[in-house]
Length: 498
Image (cartoon, rainbow, N blue to C red; front, side, top):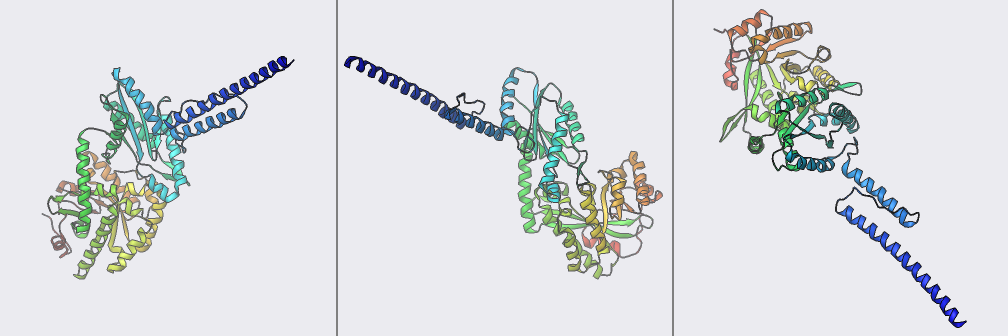
């Protein structure tokens, strides 16, 4: 019996040992799998799941881990606002596409699309409304692009690409179609908002990596202008960007060193050639480079925000000069000042104008603010309110470069305006003379005066007179000059032109 008891005891011990061994092995395997899972996550591997199906604590732990992994993957690869893939996901797929494209004759076109004025929407309506517009923009973009195309979002950028044998011109047409569909108005609080869409395009070269391709498309965006909302990257841009950064540094220094001057171009009554006012135009005289064109530094100032300081300087200098002329007896001259979109959108813009008029003791009726169509169309309700308040001050308002933007009769009728300024491109081109006639008639029907810019020949002036254009300015009478030169035209009521 003792031997039998010993055998039974040994069997029991063995069974316990095997159970413990089996449990230990089960625990060890599961722990190893879980530790391995955490290491894979640490190394950026997110496309896997822990395969533990048991109902015990390990199964619960594995289920929680997998749910956590799915959440991490969603946060890593998806934009929480639109549900779009984010840049990480796009880069992963783009890298694979670039590798596959090595043996392919097609090229990969990568687009970076941005909204140029969404910040203004956020400022006026709040970020929630701005996000609503972003969602709608994505929905429009999704409908425009093919279903298999990946669209990624980063902040206000939308990035997408495709492989194609199309030429750059064909791709440009395709990009223009996208912009046209995305530029249709968006409704916010029963107001129509127009977004300014820009696209930069990069085309892959041999051994191109995805980061370089995205960087080049973003770089191309810096060279989008008013005439062309789509730009393809080319190597020259690298040098040009360096020059732009250099110019930006000079511009910042110029503001501190007060390197700017105001020149003035007369505005005349068409029938009598009597000077009724002047347009103040900023000039930059760099101590080393000499005169720098406003066409170079004004867009840069707007892009960098420096236009706010420049705009304040122009308003101060112009009103100071106007007051000086008034003291000299030229009491009926109107001073016209260009206002940048960023200035007009400032919350205290009307108060700032009021303060300056009081500072220089100038009556509001002698100040005329010129704003462009692209300024007024950004936010119709805001524009209506600001123009109403300026009108209450007594300030005159004119729409500059009329005919080159998006204004409609409906909007013009709502705005408190005094003048329309016909863009010089219409005046110079004989094929556009019917447009000039139409704008003059439109102004007359709306009770607005009309000014023609850029008049350079007697034929142009004669045409404007025949069609009852109220005022004109341009080289035919005088270029923009310093105050002391322009002042000579104020000495008589009527100036004769040979």
